[in-house]
Image (cartoon, rainbow, N blue to C red):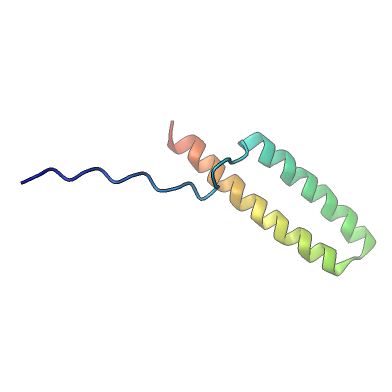
Length: 72
């Protein structure tokens, strides 16, 4: 009976060259400041685009933090 080979690690959901946590936090902060400006301007389409970008950035930040602290 032969020993099973270990499975290769799963690919990162953040892609090949993910940004570090600090860069993601900075980008998210910029999106939140932009949202305040968009609210003041009353632009519903731009607000929705910004909301989706915030959600995407939060998702990336979540996975970046998981990768950082799960490996340590």
